[in-house]
Image 1 (cartoon, rainbow, N blue to C red):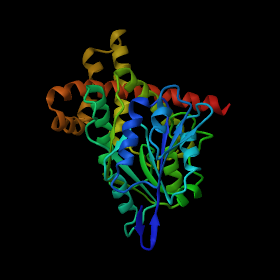
Image 2 (image 1 turned 180 degrees about the horizontal axis):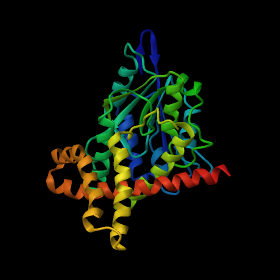
Image 3 (image 1 turned 135 degrees about the horizontal axis):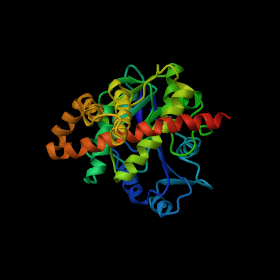
Image 4 (image 1 turned 135 degrees about the vertical axis):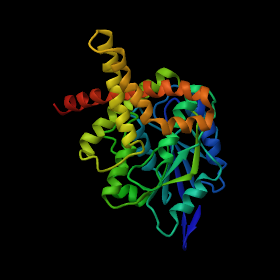
Length: 335
């Protein structure tokens, strides 16, 4: 709890959970060890088939809400939000362990003179697991989020706090259109921004991302998020006047260059273009991404950066492939 003027702000934390037994315990222990204790912690179990529920109920101060069948993150977050009694709701993913002062800092920012309506935090710079794929994937998220400061137009369900009255006023997460692990948090931010609510990103509110990534998981995640993002922008952001956490000219150009890299490779294999011409798009890709590669070098050194550079292009190829797939899904769903 924290006072805002004469009012005490109670924080309800909602943790959506599906088969998160490997990380949920650390997530909950971090919440219960906060310097400012949450008013309540609600774990919404989305029909897990592992030990997630047992891990949650072992912590007496945690309330568990169980959904009858797997419905996705939007439905789980909505179910938890609908049962909260606090003044503000903090959404924390089951694979995130907040730093001990995260809630305290979020409340301080929420109570500042400009009185934002929602706060978005950050992942810690280095993933705790230490394996290459998890660390590299985490750096890409951190790098993009760290380049944004102050007011933003998107919300983030992994580490995000919102005033309950603002959340309810815009209708909460759209669980009808955004089933599964989807773009419901970004879309919520878009709606809040259009309704003149203010969302702030604060780099001092930090949580460690505990999930372990493999190459296949990264590529699948990038492909799926790209397909979902295309559908989101067609439906909600046709003029691209609202930005999300990864929206930048560099990333937009990188998607196009990754697509041309694939087309160039195919054209070279079948003898349509020379090797020099085929190598031009990936060369430009790396020139465009030099600031990110310098960031990686400063964090982890040259050997890590060389490996991560190859992964970076592979990730953007997956994103480039996901975009037309998302468009085809949008056309199919409209019929």
